[in-house]
Image (cartoon, rainbow over all chains, first blue to last red):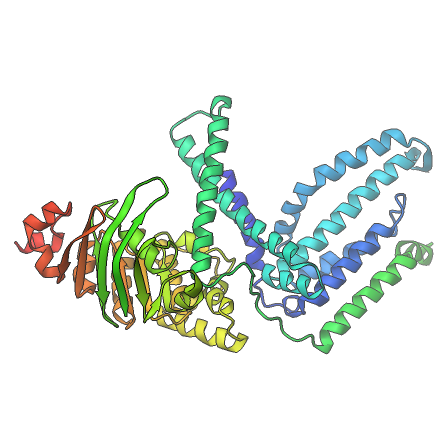
Length: 266
Length: 241
């Protein structure tokens, strides 16, 4: 299987997880979306040297993955894609901010190192929260709730169509790569002299494919407006879920649980 | 049900795909359109579905002219099953693809569910509804594509090369499924044995014109006519001879 086809399967396997039937999957999408946004805001609101306050926030993704029966591997493997960006963004801090924050087991720990760790932790928490939301809520329902939250329809449509178009593009590129490699044994990747033609062909083929898909959509009544499945009503349990989690996040924001536990045993 | 009168169609590159074609198709009948590559089969289907619009001639489906102003009404009446199911199925889940048509036509959630369930039952694909379309086999994709069209409750079904991408068993299942559908059906195909199994009438196109029109057995057993139209006598008839 080519790497591209593998990527496509990985993207779509997350969507398949969203069709689960666990308690987390049954929570109303809007409750999950608001909770996730609130979680992100709270996590990002910590200052750049604050690490101990962030640690308790790992409870949320771990709990959600357990209750939502989301394989840890599928979330962690996708997390790895985002980590290098955060790594290089944070790395410069450890060179620029060299002042000593504290000494741990005789080794001085700089403020830069603290902010580097804080950026990494915030990235891990944020990406995990978003992945968990996608893995427990079908894309169509997320889009529908975005419209209900008054996000302009045109943006939501763009997101949905781009998301679908990406799949087509990867599929076409995967087929072309397979055909290319079958006729060029021992060749890794695409030779530079073929790259231009390859990209051009990919563009033309994906245009043609997109055109066919669009025609098929029009034949089934598509008139430029995506008709989303109507969401269920928000139940009292959804309110309780949202309010309770947001309250816990707020509490963890103002009370440093790690320090509290440390004081108990100190 | 379908009335085509003196239709001609030329592609923007100047290729004349159809020339002065006139056809009448009765309600409930199953008609095949066959011909060599480039004979105009797919173009004819695209015109019937309103994907292309003809500059010369007229087309009516159930008394409604196929033209820009009537396209929504035409699309409610005409279901088009594409040659490659991957062009048709694009949602993340089979069920959402089947419900796509009814939702677009403004049916309520209850109606959409009912229409989708009926189509799922008809094509016997209940076990597939939560799966991702791209992970299905060719035969399964074909059945899902048909169900996606049936869910719209069309009166006319158009099939472009329906037996391509199918293995022999899936092809047999497809023929059986088609036998249970009482819609007016137009099938553009190279699979002449399928035509013998399913259709009571066949129209042979040659270079954009109607070359012959009649019963499949009569036309397909005429070696000279088949030779002239760029076709071959189906295997099942060759064996009989």
